[in-house]
Amino acid sequence: MPEPLSPAPPIARVAGTGSALPERVVSNAELVRELAARNVETSDEWIVSRTGIRQRHLAAHGVGTVDLAEGAARAALNAAGAKASSVDLLIVATSTPDQVFPSTACSVQARLGAAGAAAFDIQAACSGFVYAMSLADALIRTGSHRRALVIGAEVYSRILDWNDRSTCVLFGDGAGAVVLEAGTSPGILASRMHADGARGSILTVAGRFNQGSAVGDPFLRMDGKAVFKLAVDVLESSAREVLALADLAPEQVDWLIPHQANVRILAASAKRLGLPLERVVVTVDRHGNTSAASVPLALDLARSDGRVRPGQTVLLQGVGGGFTWGSVLLRM
Ligand code: UT7
Image (spheres, helix red, strand yellow):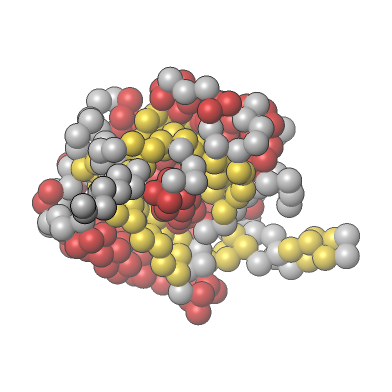
């Protein structure tokens, strides 16, 4: 008698998405005025033409990463029709936690009342959400976890040097979340994470705590041109890698949702894959660069406005400090 076939391993599928953005929306015009008062010269024309950014949300004093993460998590649980107590894995991707520890994930867990679930943060800068999704996918496939909350949450406004025009106009604050759960139909088709630490110096926040003091440069520093060039290269190679793993061609992707740093990077990536810009979800115009939050914010927006629909194939991509990058290819 043949051995009975073992059941297929579970597949992680998106059951719900959610977002949280700070109330305050700062247009380029308002930012330009505020920076002029500090003798920092920039213009709406420069920001729009070089980046595509028109506005960003900035957190008020007292609003932390955990507040935004909690808001996005609650919205995602609501969309999934799932109770917090049913979550057995909680991962927050952030490089702007409110404290060293407990992790943002543990703080969110306490607020949601999801005691007992595994909870931890991961730090892969702007690739963090894609890393977290890959990790949650892997854990769901092993059968050790069945329902995960995967969150990207950031308050980058706290690590910006508002006297450095080459970075301070680029970023915004926010959080996005996804409920991933074990199922039998796709689901995440393929995912891969990568890093090249030897290129770490092109995007850093080098400061740290030591002996009771903050030591070193506490602000984000970036060699924008180097990051731009590397980002376009790795976004293409990473997209092709996961598409090959799933035996799909680029034109079978319904929606490309890359990290939102610069509309010129999005356009260049789409062009290299032979996809029209109409199939790229663009949020950098309204959110700026929200680092680990940018991909789940864009996914949630495109789901809520009806662009991303069940059955469609979506490619999520992260790229940023570390240097890190990765992709998650999924069927909604
Ligand atoms: O989230 C992680 C991933 N991050 C990214 O992917 C960001 C990647 N990089 C970029 O998006 C672009 O490189 C930037 C938007 C950061 C910069 O655009 P760029 O076309 O590479 O400009 P640049 O840095 O070469 O600067 C061009 C000029 C310089 O002046 P000179 O030297 O040509 O006279 C800058 O001083 O623009 C000047 N500049 C500004 N001018 C007005 C830089 N920032 C500003 C500003 N306003 N805010």
